[in-house]
Length: 238
Length: 238
Image (cartoon, rainbow over all chains, first blue to last red; front, side, top):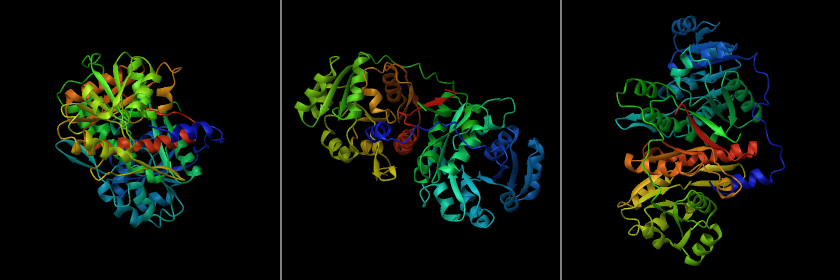
């Protein structure tokens, strides 16, 4: 890539940031909406295993309770609205098809909360996965529109649900790209990512840059098919 | 991310690919259109330094010759059309603003050639860089539309022009995401990437997945600003 990165990196007089210099988030309650899906369960499991208090949310309370019971590690289950109210940080891991409807219904419960959208709007056909372009620009920007009283960030897009859920996997060596409008909020999300062994949160811009981060999952699916991998990403030189 | 990656990776009976098992491309002549810009010069320099025959193209022959002379390592310079004709593989490194016009004019000279588009359509404002969405979907897909007789691929989007051009830098530790419709073509581009010490080419899907790869440069620019880095990407588990 050309110019601006280099000149900005060279001439800015702001100090360099250390991606590990982050707030203590160990006391925060993490809710996972859509916590009974593969991605949601996987994230809930990893955070709980790392010692975080976790509440799984589902449209149906019984399903949330069942998933919570299976995951152990003190994970609680609740209907989505109650999950939102109980949590400090709420991860949105619902299927893209239900994204707008779910968030619209929970706008009140999510008011004042730090919301982390990890939804990837994708379509699938016989050639594989392809990006869908939400009218608002991205799933995260849709969340920001629907949740005007929440602090919306985007992260955790590129994690393999298989690795997240596999109790034999001790470390998940990958970076988590974190996007958002406020440094305080993205710092919290980066710190959460860093709670999971092997993971590191890296700030990667404002929400208007979320579409390509969400869509890149289509490429990682191609990588996985070609190389029989559970591909993740590392950012070099940081 | 959920499901398809994992099921595909687990159930397909195709053998896993080795990203290093690639054709010998050491005899191919590499042309770089827009080879007098930072990105083009940087790529030309790295390929020539790796022993590849390189021709820099420019709209103005004298500028191409001047840049070639400065780079050394046997790099030649030529007007764009001549650069295209002399080369087996032609890297498109022109500014996005001139992308369509340049390729349209060179469609005949590029017929039968392997074209590698590395252009990132970006806009800039006081908040930083943001993705532009070409009508055709991406710069690479625009190239494919304008060059129906060429084999169009996309790669080399995420490289720091600063690192590419710095003769003190011996290795550039990064992966190069390679997109295209034909495995034979993407294999050649991956092999070219692997000629540069530290680099590895990784297949990352068809051209319809190029927009997010091109746009991700906006996020890397944010990373570079925050961390004062020259960020690159590594794909893990491959």
